[in-house]
Image (cartoon, rainbow, N blue to C red; front, side, top):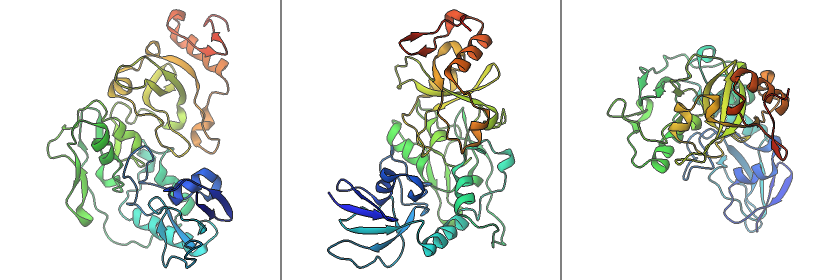
Length: 336
């Protein structure tokens, strides 16, 4: 098994492991950002260049450094390789340039975007971008279109990460959308409006790192930090049925897949669970979702399962419909 050193941290990894995944095994601040790579989607990565790193030593057999930054989500490690990420000022400057290119055409509509508060491009811009832009030309714009009954496409916000295309290729019976045209006029689109109607199409919303693909049933209903995320499940014949419910008051505003610390869906869910099951009685509540304390969502978060249990029982007002699992059994909703 090859050994690789990333920013002074050495780890032994299986053959074929990429630098990015090796860094994720170590964890912490040394993990490069990634906008297009998605571990659950095959052949993803290699499009956005945000995960570039500096290889200061190729391997024990060939210790020469690689002449330019490499894409860590595609480059596999070699025994004795030494990698610099946050310890290389030159690399950080190069990444800031990549972020500047990604933001060239991206509109400054965070105040009205449904992705605000959980947008990977926002995080990338704050952590790796510049304070101001040097771009002086007109940004490209596209008309908003519906690419399905439940999905609105804002192509103006798209960074062409190809994640939604990978979802269509790998999770759906036939792909009906993709990248049209080339260069500055390249866009994600369909030849027929409303063409995206398969059972797993909603996962394109979950994998989108920006606000290009949005849930039409959730649009403009609330800022995400005013909602309370809760893990829940149901018996579903089309998917695992393990989801995250987003409450505001008495209402479930949206249903999404559960995501890990890298913003990737743990398991993909079907459209039935996502769009059609928005009653508390449809679900078995497991407890508050784990939200990193650095996220703005954590400001309005449940502190305990008991608090969630009491709040849910009150708003449902039908004890026979709610099951909150705690320890070995389920709590009685009347027991407050």
